[in-house]
Image (cartoon, rainbow, N blue to C red; front, top):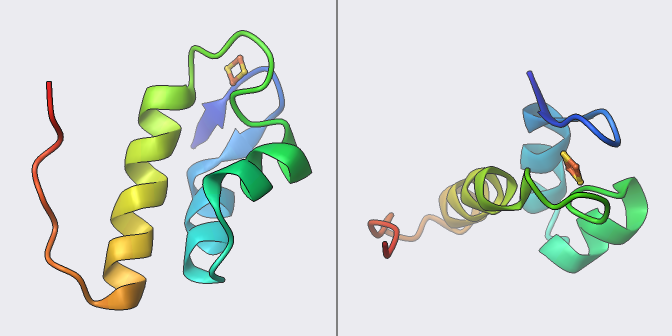
Length: 65
Ligand code: FES
């Protein structure tokens, strides 16, 4: 599914970036994700952080409100 509508960035692309060891900033620079209106940033970061934690086999912590 598209997470960033402005730049057509999918959840799959976000997970792949995280699993490849890239930072969120690198993802954003490469794809434009969260660089335009910013409406996608919260969901994109949640997907990114979850994928990165799984890739590192870290426990998943609940998001702060
Ligand atoms: S929806 Fe991602 S920057 Fe606008």
